[in-house]
Image: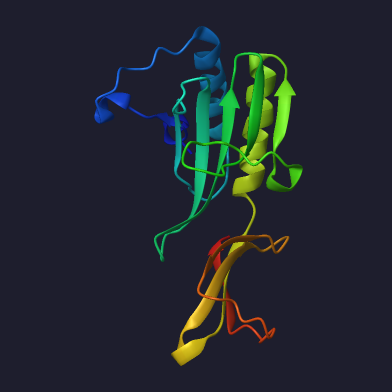
Length: 177
């Protein structure tokens, strides 16, 4: 993929906010991350770079989607602070992170280049994970649906009530290869 395809910088002026003034380390991190991402052979996913609401870090994030159902299945982010990062699954609209390793959370300190390499590898590993939609019978011929990582069964999103009786699934459909 083209280097410009990943982690485009969000324009705060679209929201009548002042432009961001990224520091030298932030720009170097973003350039190194984007250069590494240009070599990825992964399915497309939305990604952006910007700042969180409190403007405390450079924020880069990706979203996994089920485009057919117009549903965000989850978001994962890295907060870059110059000499260290915090990364993991996003838990709210302010891009706060789940703080447990089960949600991919990690902290690291290193050089800008080393941090960009580690974060690029982390994002790429996430983007390579297959996602399936699992549909089960439900009331009135409808289906209860959940989306999961096919490699671990970790549920990403649910729509409808999943039957408690353990009824068999109707089908497993690939969402992301």
